[in-house]
Figure (cartoon, rainbow, N blue to C red):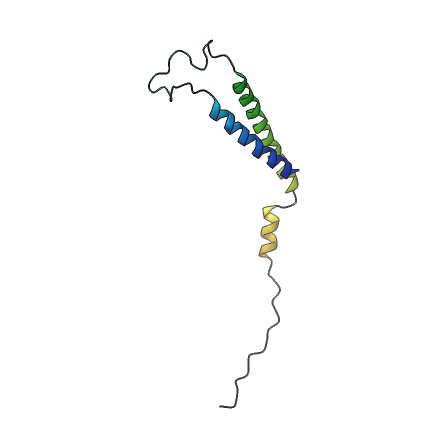
Length: 107
């Protein structure tokens, strides 16, 4: 399930990036250098279909992010960091000791 949501997230992000890049710039650059009276909240800036699709895909993107976090939480419910640390702190079995090598007496 998480793989399907992750692929959907990737597709949405690519489409959303494309939609944002093809929109007309409002020109303001954070208010530096003017921009005119055709701002975002004026009556002349009617919502176009591209802006509407961007808003819808943005909402779907956020909903998919939340769904991904819930699915990952459910899938990894049994894998707690505390449990992993407890297993790692237990001493491992010592391997059987081998006797030291005897030196050759042919010298």
